[in-house]
Length: 261
Image (cartoon, rainbow, N blue to C red):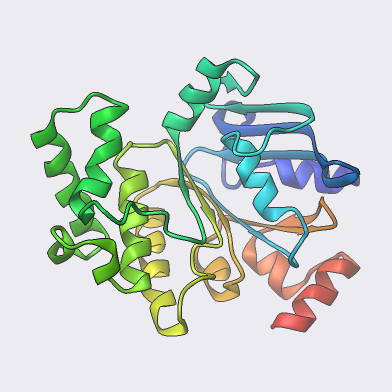
């Protein structure tokens, strides 16, 4: 990584300073046997900042965000979330997972539980929230993602877009400080993509800190404070949506965007 890319990847948007960072990655390396998925990643996310990560398949995008909440264990470097370093200490891992909501490509809802129970389960079991309070919160979140009428249905009765919005509400129920999205629309039919993206846009407008891995370039242009382009396990280029989409500097970025835009 060049010095300029290092600076761009760790320099947050707006007037945010280093002490405003809620996620910090320094020199992070992740290997799968002989394959190096992440190569010396330096990266920071400021509070209330929306960072969108783009790049070709296999570039390390999903691995990067999965390392933030220890779904993947990094091999070198350090990861700090809201002042807590991610180590082998189970308490640290649990603490960080409480503060980071995660939405996956697949919805991962419990099929035998209603929508309301899917959302209220974690606040009750992990945060010790009383059942009535957890259910009230769950209904508020269903209003927030615009499907309050689905509360008593089971996941199989919902469309893919509705299930993904339930998954978003379920993550929000833990009141996370950071939301991580791993290609949240890639498993959806085209007509359902916008309803999920609209829910994420709403979160952005409310000031939620987010890291979003996506192939939706229009969404990235509209919502991101910064866009990170990854290729071959490296952060190749970082900039505002206007900088990165309209005048990319790096040949690998230019080639990728020429193929998809």
